[in-house]
Image (cartoon, rainbow, N blue to C red; front, top):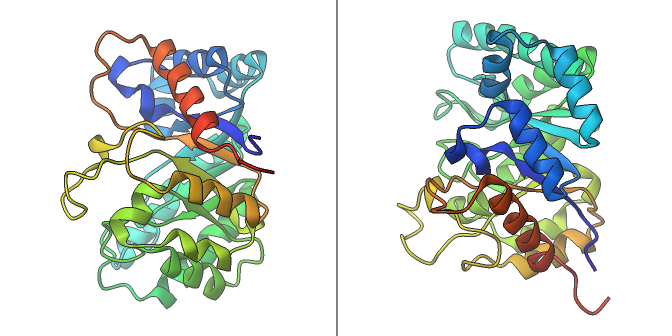
Length: 277
């Protein structure tokens, strides 16, 4: 049984240098229900003369949902001037995403955050969430395993709690759980409703955890990640949302973009299916 919804993060298709409409077309043709787009690709589409409404109609015609977007604004940078500029950037980008019909935007610990307390992060996330609410979109609090702060699931849970945002949701990623030292067992402290989206991937036993990079990610089921345990944990806490394939493989050899997307969908459904239910 596969109790989740499959999505494709556009990063997986980056080696093919596709413009955003092609990314959407490939994801829909492969059979995904959702797609995560990158703001940089949306900006390139708009700079090339496209409009948000044209793209929205195109996406609607494919039947796929834009379930999240990947953006990089330093919403909790230690420098107040940088944060002020970040919120201006966030407002512009979130307004564009809301107009597109995108449900959410990732909010990772981007910027200079090493000396920022978790309490300050919580306060800044509350401000970001309030801005997003007025625009009509949600920020998903993301932790990065190699970030100087907000590198663990426990820190993200603390920031979400301390923010006071009643419907705060976290973005999970097994690669970042691994590199930051977060245990899958920690998911038992979460309710499925507190998870906005789950990025799925796998990682090999080598390179070592302290030097492994995004480009080393592999398809689910091809590495050493505790994927079956993660799937069961998500199911047990009531999560039934999107599992989005996020890879940064630099070369897929002779495979086409559609073949890569189809292989990814098969890997997700096989690896994250729940046994003995």
